[in-house]
Length: 114
Image (cartoon, rainbow, N blue to C red; front, top):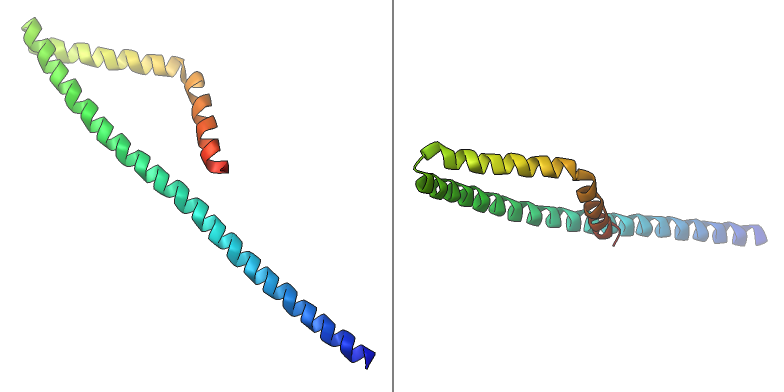
C-alpha cells in the first residue's frame, strides 16, 4: 500500500513537473516574441524615419546645388561643391568611426537588455 501511494505521488510530481515545463516554455516563448517584436518595430520605425530623412536631405542637396550653381553662373560647379562636401563628410565619418560606434553600441545595448 505504501508503494502504491509513493507511485501515485511520483506520478503526480511528474505531472506537476511536465505542467511547469510546458508553462515555462510557453512563458519564455511569449517573452521572446515580445522582445523580438519590440526590437523589430523599433527598427522599422527608425528605418522609415531614416528613409524620410534621406529623401529630405536629397532634395535639400539638390536645391542647394541649384542655388550655388545660379550664384556662380556655372551649372556644374554647385553640384561639384555639394559632392565635395559629402566626400569630406564621408571622410570625416570614416576617420572618427570608432568614436561614433561606441555610443551607438551603448544605446542599442540599453534597448536590447531592457
